Image 1 (cartoon, rainbow, N blue to C red):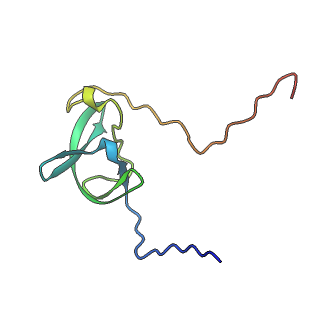
Image 2 (image 1 turned 45 degrees about the horizontal axis):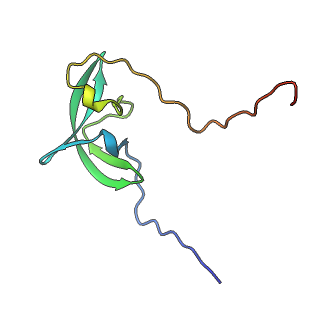
Length: 100
């Protein structure tokens, strides 16, 4: 017999950011966010890490747009345009044509 158990000791609902978007300098953790049409640094307090995401305990409001790509080309004050991520949950529709 085989038994698999998942034990959840604590469950929280907090915002999380991709680990790759996090910049760490000494004791300061920060992310680039979009303010208006420019990039700006936001200092955050981080919690647990899981599956490539970092829990944000303080410093970000829900809905804040985070810059997650081309970080090497962006700094505070850089003009940016938000581009929505592709919907990863949508199932691909099968192709239709003369055969199907």
